[in-house]
Length: 576
Image 1 (spheres, rainbow, N blue to C red):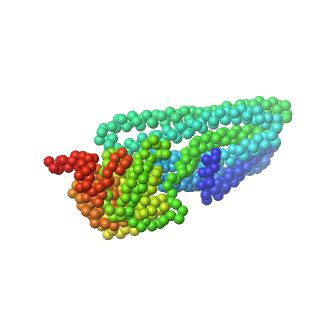
Image 2: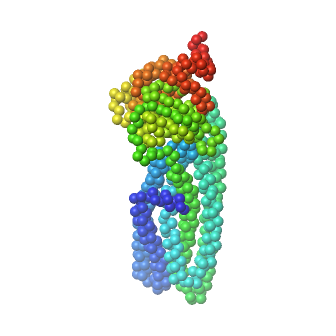
Image 3: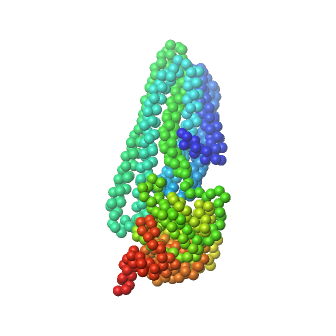
């Protein structure tokens, strides 16, 4: 319950709607509780005395009570809906805002599919709990207390039946809710797995079709779908026991009431109208108990979802800006001083070990190394996508941890190995680099990245819609647009992580020439092709997370065996 209480603090301005809803439910309940009293008088006085005027008078009062109960119920529905959906929107906003502050290491703790489920399905469960469970949560206890009280007021001897049946019913409900609670947590995890399979399949649908793996993917989906169906069946098989248990208890109470009440009528100690009104209270009390039980089931599922949501909100942000942080990066110099890094504190081995590297502002640096040599990991430490485990990374002569994250990352433009373009137009994607850029600046950046070659063929130029994931562009076109977007930042440090791998050699040469003219920018190029880095000021060779060698192309070609092997293996075809 503590997790739900914490989330209720996000109710904000919708707390007023909740308070109004409580008042409306109580008013509605009072009108409904008054009807059985009127029914008893109608039968015992009006019907027994054959007084038609009295019958119509009491019937009119009952109708007025029913109309006012209906009006207050409709008003409650309006305020409850506004409160529940407004609360859900605020929870999603809080989750999304917190996730935006996550570092890469925070994101490593959650699968993307799980985060999506926690922002959608889990929030919907909480919304439904308020929308569908708030009324019985308020109405149930009130109707129960008032119904039992009025029952004792009408006939204390008959009301003792509640005292006998209620504990047995409470014990049955306790065991049902106790068993169903943990099953809801398992159910939500199964939803995570289903979303993961669907997301992965749809993201890689072209690869699935290319390798004719549709049947295999269908079998994977069938497996997780069957597991979800099984978890749902096991959960709700226990949950639905709630209804038959209540119905059995309700009919047992009614039978006992009719038996003892009938005998009391025959003995002359109870009137027929009183028994009729009493049975109305019996129905109200039993319905109240059923409402309370349903609320417990809703709370059980809501509690599981609330725990999952709070896990997202409680995730400790690893990377934050320090107090009195520097807001300006003076230049693009980069220094690694005895830097070691591992992705998890409990990892046995370091991804990077003892890295010492000094890059002057405006220099052009190439980084080569085999797969898994931690080239990408090295450059991710510069904009603090991760923090070094040991040692210091300096930019502009200062520890990167002394800068505000915004200032540091504004000074560093990184074109990641995986090209990411968003739904929308080319213009909207490029403006990520500089929201204030005009058409002239956008076209200049596109020319520098050689994106103008295909941009001119686009039907709407900069306003061409790319669709989801820019599916209408080739890999090389995506890479060039990503480079153009990075150049629009006018960064002090530009990192190209294998970002021309899908570009032909001639176009890559043009891009290199354009970048070489930007002498104020420190350029760090990670590449697989040796031609991409052979003209840089320094070439760094990484091997198994350690710096193997540093030097220019002629120096490394003359003395380093790894570089010689890479060079001869790639240049042999050209020589022949």
